[in-house]
Image 1 (cartoon, rainbow, N blue to C red):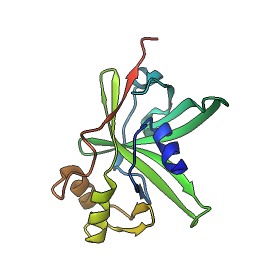
Image 2: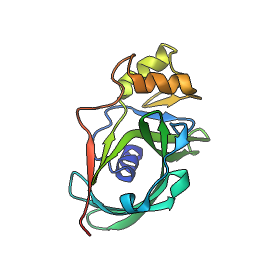
Image 3: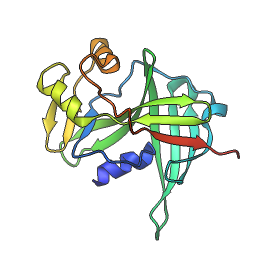
Image 4: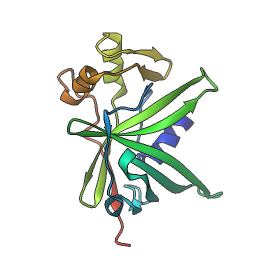
Length: 183
């Protein structure tokens, strides 16, 4: 659950992942989303009212740096880098999960994101749907205890994910929204 909490905090998605998380060997998306710092930088408030500061690190590479305070008593400053990649009309937020202690692999946690005026809307992947596509060999990957690891995804796989011809792969009903403050 701690790994899940880290990703939830980093992407500012404070909701349940359920029993499993979906990871990938490579970041999802085909090309970086070119960022306009004026639109992305600043203080954002999560659905739960927690502030998160976003800074654009590399606009041409779609890289953001996030900072937030974690813990009620200890109040520890946490930071993370997120890369935004596009695939067709979709944008994916990708966060590196260093899981070398378990199996030596670097994995990416991801979510679908959309920036709409003063909001960033985030949708989590539905683990049971991705697990079914991996089991059915429609998407490359493997299943472990509480993790679905997607393998090397080509453009045809990203089309499957974005088209939803094989089912609703993201939790559209429970988006997480960040709202930019008026600074």
